[in-house]
Length: 130
Image 1: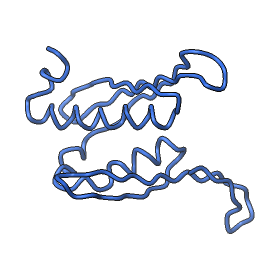
Image 2 (image 1 turned 180 degrees about the vertical axis):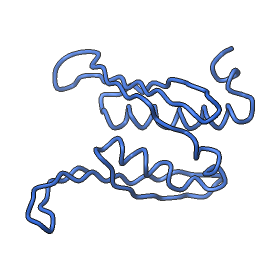
Image 3 (image 1 turned 120 degrees about the vertical axis):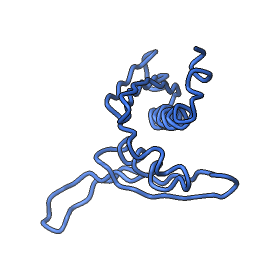
């Protein structure tokens, strides 16, 4: 949700809020977060409550976010490229593609987290096709 509203001082602010529902080990978890834009809010909400995996992604950092429109018009297909890194010095890129920029961003964010979890288990090369 992106909403423009007045704050306590009467200034017009844009507020971005995301609600994410994920299933971890058969248990549904729902998280809500506000951020500096819809993708930041989505990232915060997604990372907020991943149960036993929470500590494993604590050092995951999104370092770059790029959007590319693959065709023109109001029904454009959007490609999102996210670069991530961790404290071990690893860097990786994930991609999301959709006609919805938020959906494409969510795909890339989820893939980044999954890659980090696989990397922690020594399985990242399997996922990356190495």
